[in-house]
Length: 200
Image 1 (cartoon, rainbow, N blue to C red):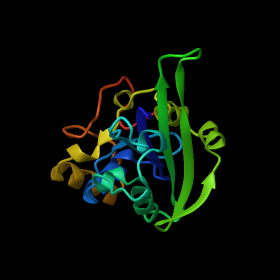
Image 2: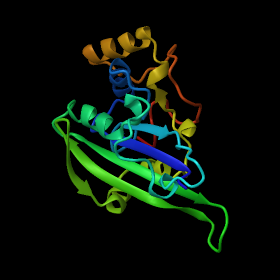
Image 3: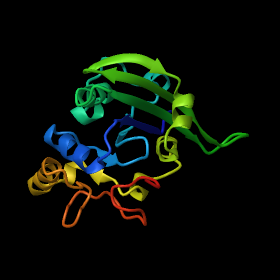
Image 4: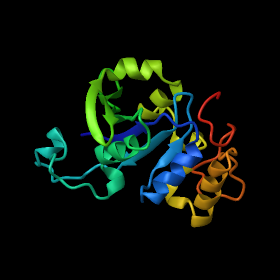
């Protein structure tokens, strides 16, 4: 049974804080991390629990099952964010099994990647080649090798209206939107520069 279900949406934007503010305005509850490959939207999904003999324990949720919230609908989020730039967005969808028994305990599962443009799904991308070409923090997050709390992420659900206005006003003035003094949305503490997921 799948233990970990996460998705991330890679965008071409430099400012994670600005993207978090836009996500908050759209009612999305996600974590946003700055990487050298662009601001990344990240969300870990609740793993469905079924009866012991339910076939979905093997096949996964039915495609027609409605997500609990818009934030859980990865294609919808990727489509929404793709409308914000002519470069679109890339959805990285991960289902992992954490195996603690057997001859080779470890992590196995499936990673899929797809481009989105103007709100619509486009071509699939070879996920291995994609992850190898991105900031290592992206692969580490998606494979569970790094916790989101170690990435100085911003939680869009915790941003207040004052936080959002502060970020957007700085953008309008051409100032650095990454100054988080007094903001409520930081998801965790780390030694990294706020708003930076790597060595940017």
